[in-house]
Image (cartoon, rainbow, N blue to C red; front, side, top):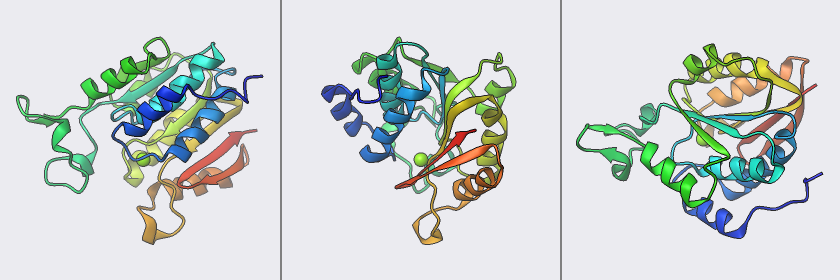
Length: 213
Ligand code: MG
């Protein structure tokens, strides 16, 4: 078992400096889940952004030495990351094409972490990718894409059926208290929790974790 393995210190500090909305504690939680999950099948994340979570998940895949991480994003930013919106970041705006483009930042961070063999970028809409998923059982799904109720539900319905028994379903931005943030991931997390095929592992900061029975 590799469950006591730890991240390379330089990769952890690189991840800490990557733009994103995941805390180091949440990242390390994902890392430890993925160490076990990558023995069962590939990991999939929805919402790559600049690669912060991909470094934690990809590092776990590298250490496990079997399956890789598929990191899915259209790389054009979510609604709240567009120009004029709350989470717009001018550094991520491609002026020539007049749109947000996080892909170069993502690729550079994965390269700097030495994880190009373990993090496979998939550029596209997550539900569209799911439609063509070739049927491989997945060890871990991390849902952190669009945060509207429709988007979170669609990602849950598209991807969770592929998770193997013993594998993990993780949601980011799970806030039981509406004062802390949007409710869509939390509501979908509750819905999954109510389905008897999932066992609750817990909520770590805002990372909700379930395990397939
Ligand atoms: Mg998030």
